[in-house]
Image (cartoon, rainbow, N blue to C red; front, side, top):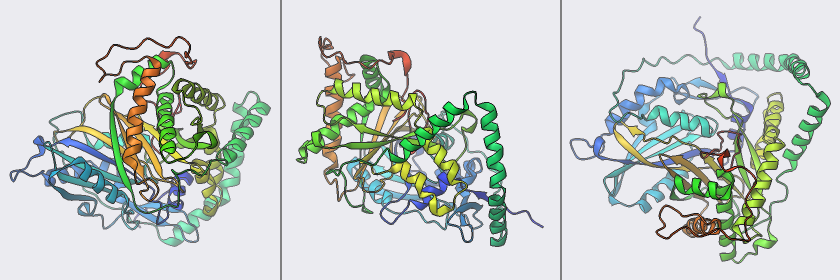
Length: 511
C-alpha cells in the first residue's frame, strides 16, 4: 500500500486561518523593485520564462509551496497535503504597467493584489512579475498566507528565491511526485489518537518542567503572572480616527531611509533600534491624529509588536514561532526625547518580565483545545489594538534574481480587526524599507502619514543632535537640558532586530 502524507498545522498556524474573514485577509506580501537590464528578453520585455524556470528549480527546497490545505473531519483544523494538480502557471503570474509605469501606479497595483484573498483550494502563495516600470526597472509582488510563514521564515524563503551571486545558474530540480493524501477516516483516527495521548504528553512535560526548574514556586508564579497580563494587555485601546470598520480594500505606500541614519539615531540616543522606530511611529501618529482633529492627550493608542520565539534549531523551518507585545505609544508627549525614554522603559520591562512567553503558553494550551478555542491565542496577538508595527532584519548585501539586482523590498502586514493602518519595516543592503498598508475607507490620506514619518525622523535627529546622511549642515550640539537618553548601552544593538508578523528574534528586543 502506498504511504500517505499529511502534516498537521500547529495551533498558531491554524489560528491565522481562523482569523481570516472576507474583510481581513491573512496573507503577508511584499513589493520588490529590481534592475531590469539582466533579465531583458529578445523582445525587450522581461524574460518571464526564465523566471518561471528558476522558480521551478528551487520549489523542492520549499515543499510547502506545492502543498494545500485539507481539513480534518469534524474539526476546524487543517493539515498540509501534496497538491496532485499543482500548476506553476497559476502561482507565477505576468503583468505590466502602461509604460513608463510610475511608482504610484505600482503602489495601486500592489494594493489591488493585496486586497484579493488567496484560493484555499490551492497552495497559498502567488508571485506577480510586473514589467514596464520606469527607470529600467521591474517589480515582483509576492503574497503568502500567514499560516505558512512568519518574518524569519519569510526572509529565508527570499534568500532561496534569490542569490548573492549575480550570475547564478538554473539547476535541474528533482521531479515532483505528489504523495497521496490520507483518507478522511485516517485523519479522524489520527486526531482521536492524538487527543487520547495528550494527557500522557502533558504529564511528561510537567515532569520535565519540574525536573529542570530550580525554583518551582517562583517560576510557576512568574508564568501565571505573564499569562494573566497577556490575556488582559490589550483591553484599553481608545477609538481613534485611525480605526474603523474593516474593509476588503487596501491602499499601499512606502518610504526608504538609510540604515546608517537609524543606526546613528540608535547610537545618539543610547537605545535599541526598535526604540528608535517606535519613537518615530509615535511622533507620526501624534501628528496625524492632530491633523484629524483628535487630542492625543486623551487617547490610549496601543500597537502590537510581534516578537519571535524561534529557537536557533528552528531556523529555516516554515510556519510561525511568534509572540507579541502590546505597547502603549506615548502620543500624549510632544518631546521626542521624552517619548523615547518612556518607550525604552516599557520595552525593557517587557524584556525583563519575558512577556513574549505569554502567547507561547496560550498556544501550547491551544494544541490540546478544540479548534473553536484557538481564537484565544489569536486574540492575544491582535487584541483590541490600534495598529501593528513589525520590523524584520534582512540581508545587508545585494541579492539577485537571475542576475537582476534587487533594489528595494517593501513589506506589507495584514490589518486585524478595526486597524486602519499596519506598518512593516525591513532592512536590506544598507537601507530600511517601510511598507504602509491601510484601509482606504479609514485612512484615505495615507500619503500624509508617510510624510509625517519622514518629518519625524528629522525632528528626532534634531532633538538628539544627530546628523542624517542627507543633511548638509553640521551636526547640532546636543541639548544641555534634554538629555533623556535611555539607559541601554549604545553598543547593545548593531542591527535592525525585530519582526514581521511575524517576528524574528526576542533578544535584544522586538518591535
